[in-house]
Length: 158
Image (cartoon, rainbow, N blue to C red; front, side, top):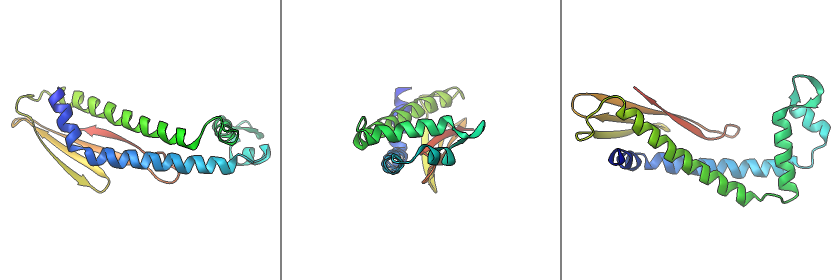
C-alpha cells in the first residue's frame, strides 16, 4: 500500500502544485475582499447576504463572513495567517485524497505486486490508469475553482 501511495504522489505532483497554488491565491483574494467589506454597515450586509426569514435579518453565511471581515479589521487574524492555513489545508486535503484513492484502488482487487500506472492530463483534470495486467482501474479528478468558488477536487474511480 505504501508503494502505491508513493507512486500516486509521484504521478500527481502537478495536481498538488496547482491545487496548493490556487488555494493560496483564493485565500489571498478572499482576505483582501474581506478587508474591503469590513467597513460595511449592517444594512449593506443584510442586502448582500439576506436571510430567507426576512429582509432585515442577516443569513448565517453572511454573519460568518461579517465576523471574518471584522477579525481582519481588528487584527485578530492576519492575511498571512489565512494564507498559511489555506496552504496547510490544501496539503492535508491532497494527502488524504491520495490515501483514499489508494484504498479505493486496492478494493478493486488488483495484485499489488504487478501494478503499473500511467497518468495523463486532460485540461485541468488528471486521469490515472492503474493496471496489474488483468484488471484495470481508472481514476479521474473533477476539479473546480474560480473567483467565487474555493478550489477543490475529488477522484472518481471506475
